Image 1 (cartoon, rainbow, N blue to C red):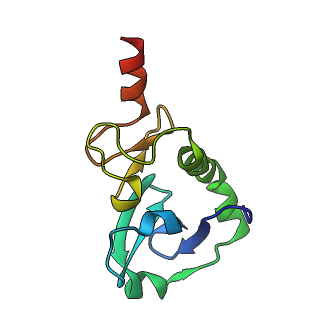
Image 2: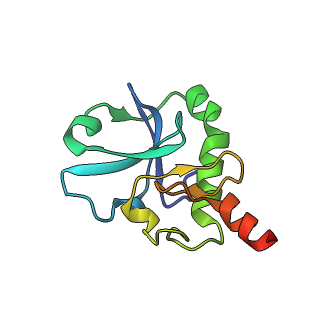
Amino acid sequence: MSGDPFQVRFHSKLGVVIYDPLTQMSIAKEQVRLFKITSMSMTTFRRDIVNKDLGVGEPDVMQESANAVDAYRVARQGKVKPYCISCRRHFGSVDFSICTECTAVRCTCGTCGCVARKRKAA
């Protein structure tokens, strides 16, 4: 995971989270956007509150999250546009989740790779 452009960390209340510099667009300096492995979704938090409990997790806890981190890696590096095909919002500027069906980014408007596949099939 060391070659990734994002950091996988552990938070005492949130569990395993991903800090990705690409997702920090359009947020205030005092905020931070983190991807929560437990819910497979991106959420914005106050930086000072989250940072005090952020650290390195136990190896076994981090290993349990390896599949979810891989899903994030695939969605991030996927051959999809960096913005929603429906509402055109850039994924770096909104909180989003990852679809468990297609492992693509799901925008807050509900659009994911499943919608794109359905359009191509029609």
